[in-house]
Length: 69
Image 1 (cartoon, one colour):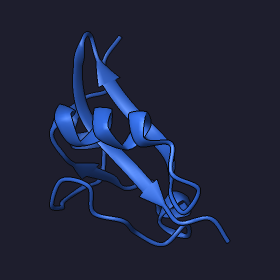
Image 2: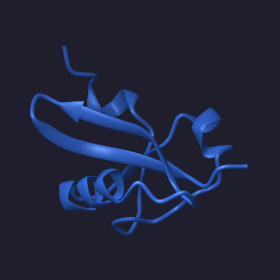
Image 3: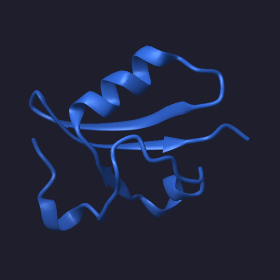
């Protein structure tokens, strides 16, 4: 069951934008395109971590990135 849009705090972000890990505790989702999410996952770079991907059915609706501490 999908979470209603009005229950998800969302802020706009550029695809691939990185945010501080503390953003996790704010429960925010970033609006990014599926290509940016795929690229981040496939890159597997040591200096980045994909920490949350929200999926509604087969559509990526958001992702949250954080740099490791």
